[in-house]
Image: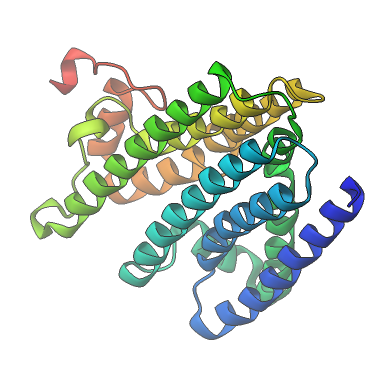
Length: 261
C-alpha cells in the first residue's frame, strides 16, 4: 500500500471517529472527550502504519505494541479523569468565548485534532519504515519508552491521589515527582516521543522522527499544555501556585529552590 493511501485512509478513519465523538459531547456537555480521542487515534494510526509500512516486521510489531500500550494507558487515564472531574477549564473558556457558535467551532476543533493525530503519528510511521536489523538503538528506544511510561504513570497517580484527599482542596501538589517539576506528567509524555526517534533513526528520512519530540515540546510548553493549565491554576489557587511557579521548574525535573523546601 502506498504511503499516500495509508495516510488518507488513516486520516479518514480518525476524522469520522472525531465526528462521532463531537456528537457525543453535544449530549454530555464535556468536550474533554477529544483528548481521549486524540490519544486513541494516534495509537490506532500507529497500529495501522505498522500493518502497511514496508520496514522490518519485528520493528513494526514493536512500534505497534509500544504505541498501542501508550495510547491505551493515556486514554484510560483520561477516561477516569473525565468521569471524576468536571469539564476541563480550557473547554469551559472556549464555550464562554464562542457563545452561540460553540458547537460549530467545536466540530472544527475536533477535526483539527484528527489532523494533529495523523501528524503526530508520522514518527511512528517512519519507525515502521526502518528496515535495518534490530540493534542497540532499538533497545535504547524500548528502554526510553519504559522510563517515560513509568514516570508518567507515577506522576498521574501521585496527582490523582492528592486530589482525592479532601484536605488538599485549594492546595498545590508537591508530592513525589511534583516536587521537582510543575508538570512531570508532561515531561515524561514528551520523553516518550524520543523512543520513536531511536527506533526510526536508521530508516529512510529517519531524522524527521525528531518532529515528534520537537512539536510535542512546543505544544506542551507554549500552546495547549502548560500555559492554559497554569492560567487556570493561578485563578483557582492564587498566591500558593505563584509561589510554586517561583520555586519549581516548569518542565524539566530539577531540585526546587530553597523557598520550596
